[in-house]
Image (tube, rainbow, N blue to C red; front, side, top):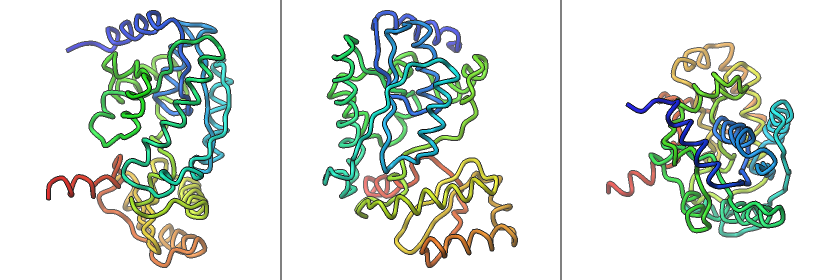
Length: 274
């Protein structure tokens, strides 16, 4: 079996061959690892771009900037407005394609302005197991995925990040708030605001890996399986129920399957099987 060290060496060689990269940076596990290695290999030929929008909590943006500051990463912050794109707001299964097409297009333009030839994202090998229209946008625009090219899995990225002392090594996975809304339900600012507030409330109660899925008047909560019992306890349950009523959810449910990446894509899987 190939070692993490071999994959890291391949990543270094790949970045050297690229000669420069504009990195789509979010402050998450993958993009922070890629940005840290790229900064080491490429120096000032590595540039991080952090996009903020209504689909991404302000707290995540601020944390990403803080992490970048601690690591000495060069970051440009841009604003995007996906909700102005009807193809995105309509929330079809290809939603992420339209979002990533706009984002990568902006990154390509920034690369041209700085004389940097490549745009790179933090996609890894495990992402191939989920439905990712954004990957199609990356392929069409010539965006590289150095971590995937080097063969890194999510767990390997966490492990090497831990060895490197990166503060994100054990950070919970995160995706834009739009991923909490079922396909076909229009993405609206008020829904995004309520989801953000709901998840911040749960995190304030000590739950680290959290998703609140929006199903009209129903909120479906996902936490790690080992945290389900605590969330279902009388004290916590009553707090959550009261808060979610304030957020205009008529019913609050707890998903007994626990958190899993891309759970909203289950309807797509079912459609393919049928």
